[in-house]
Image 1: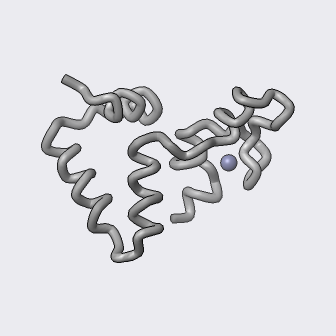
Image 2: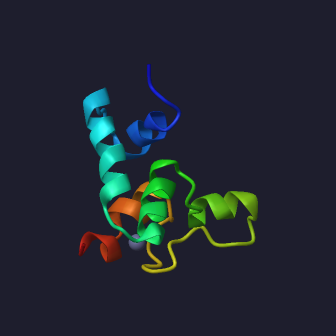
Length: 90
Ligand SMILES: [Zn+2]
């Protein structure tokens, strides 16, 4: 059975990870840094709690849905976390 967290990842990133891999993902998110802010960001990403330009636009259509860094693509979750040219350098 997939958790509520695994389903958006499968949809957004086209990733089907087994339970063992998810356990490793959770462990890595907890151990990535001793900095609480860094760990918080990792957990916010995993829980889909980061507000993206696209989700912000859904809440307020007056706001742009374009990614502010690149200004060339819609700021979807996948784009902001994974495929934006500003992220790809990492
Ligand atoms: Zn971009």
